Amino acid sequence: MIKVVCDLMGADNKPIDLISGVIDAINNNPDVFCYVLAPLNDIKEKLDSMSYNKNQLEVIDCNVEITNYDIPTKAFREKKDSSLVKGLNLCRDNDDISAFLSCGSTGAVLVSSVFILKTVTHIRPALSPIIAGKKEFCIVDCGANVDCRVDQLLDFAKMGVAYMEARGVLTPKVGLLSNGAEEKKGNDVIKEAHQELKKIMPNNFIGNVEGKNILYSDSDVIVCDGLMGNIALKTIEGTAGVVAKEILEMSKNESLEVQKSISKMLLNLRSKFDYNTQGGAVLLGVNKIVIKAHGAGVAETFTSIINQAYTLAKGDLVGKIKKNLGVEE
Image (cartoon, rainbow, N blue to C red; front, side, top):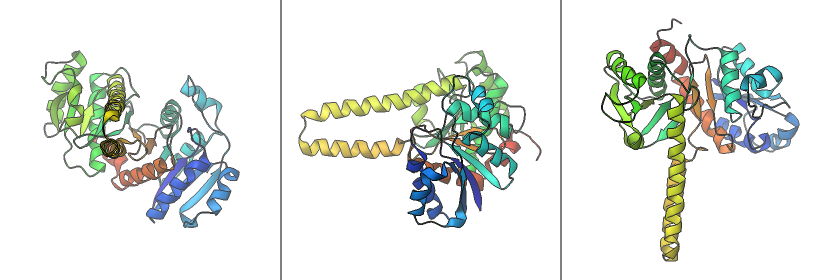
């Protein structure tokens, strides 16, 4: 049985709008148990109206949420009775719980996870989403660390390899995000990291990846600091949105049949990249699986991240990270 903690608070949508996603996940997988943190009075009527195995769900009544704070550490310190802190404490104190899942404030989730769950060793945890390009790949880091040393980028590569291994990828290929494919491109940190990755990952490292090739690279893991990763991620999201709007605008003069065909095509394309179905970003480097989904997530989002947590727990993500970082169990 894979046990996960689902924090339904702190998101844009209310717990009553999200709980059905949890129910769908456990109904589709008898090997999952979910602890749900939410106001019981808010979701009880909906829960009572749904059919599910009561042995796969436990609601922990909680009415305090952490919303966006300018200083995430302040949120962690001031709201000890919040669903976020309670959920992470529950995850930390129970060895049989594998993961913590939330759509709440990114900064608060990251900081609280590090304080409560601790890191597997003295590293900087990294936030890593899965992107759908020519094939699915992860970016490490997408925003947790703005300035990085060479050794931190090497740790990101090792954790990214562990992440993709836990997803079932054999010998994941690692690319280093830079402003050119040549190994002499990039700033001093990138150039040194390139040389070190060649040494320590001869079977994984395939060289630099330019921004224009991110979606069509052979990489399973793309390594970068959080500043570059966040810009790359949001540029991909923004470009996709602009292109879709331009195509729809250009199709206005076409026949109704052509417009319907184009709309259907764009809808299918959107579903491939929809964050509600693609899971969340994983915080790599802490002692439990932590998945941060989009703040505007819906019920389907929780179904997706529960499935994601299940796969990573079965694939022993944390154990693989420790092994790749040389941490003794």
